[in-house]
Amino acid sequence: MMFFVLLLSFLPLLTGSPIPSQSPNAQRVCDGGFHNIYDHCIQFRTQEVSWYEGKNLCSNMGAKLAKVDDANFMYYLVKFIRNNGLDGYYYWIGASDEGHDGLFRWTDGTAVKMGTPFWGDSSDQVQEPDSNYNHNCVFLARHDHFFFFDYDCSAPEAIICEK
Image (tube, rainbow, N blue to C red; front, side):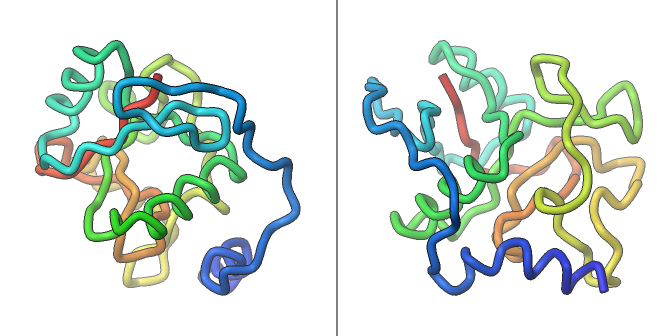
């Protein structure tokens, strides 16, 4: 049942249909290889690194791992990934429960929204996060329409930086 609800929430992504929402602000100018996606300056780095290395790489560019806390932003982010041939990767984003197991926070300390429409579900139809003690960092999972999954922070994945 949860999978069905989750699937319905992202049906526009799967069908290519537009969703009713505020259109992205095309006025914002993003520099240095960053793209304006729903008024966020975003850069995709396909070099696969750990979550910690990704956090440092973003920081060295004056950015942070992306904070995906709005469903409309997530829609446009995934649409950009698909439309630009970037869908062959898993992407670290700026959320983890490191040091406070089960309480996911963004790198700015704010709480990560739980449940639909952000989190995916594992193969046994249990919605993420799956409470695995070694899975403390969050990525967008290519195998599940780029929904959130918690995973081992040391695994090498691509990253999304945000200014």
